[in-house]
Image 1 (cartoon, rainbow, N blue to C red):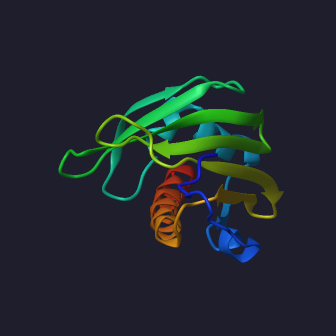
Image 2 (image 1 turned 180 degrees about the horizontal axis):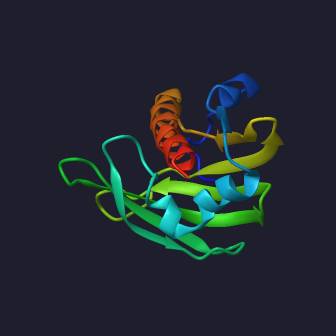
Image 3 (image 1 turned 135 degrees about the vertical axis):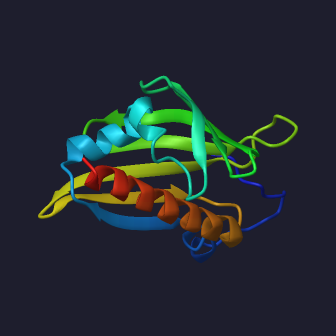
Amino acid sequence: MTETATAGDVFTEADITERVLVIDRVFKAPPERVFAAWTDPAILVKWWGPQGYHTPECAMDMREGGAWRTVMRNAEGAAHIVSGVYREIAPPHRLVLTWGWEQEDGSRGPETTVELDFEPAPDGTRLRLRQHVFNTTENRDGHRMGWTSGLDKLDALLAAG
């Protein structure tokens, strides 16, 4: 994980805790189906990204240590590229990956870790998404909006069958 800290910076536990994003969501589908929506590129491209974005490019080397990369485009066609590496794959219960945005100069921005836990629930699957540690609370909040919108799209896709 890469932090954008300078020498001498001191982070308290409270500083770190406020730069962690946690989202809990229940989907009306079994864990196997929700997990597949995250790991099958043919399904992922149907819901990935916030409302108003589509994902014309997706590459997934679905193994621990394997890389993944998506290109999302907004309504104006601007590309938003994110990539990372799979750290843990335990179907259909857990998926852990790194996350970093590609910058305009081709470098990667600050990296976070995304932990996804898929638990059976009475109505289907409880997904817990935990992304950490953001370099700022503003970045955390931006991701909360993006994930919430994208998960709405996933919910609609799963409900449609």
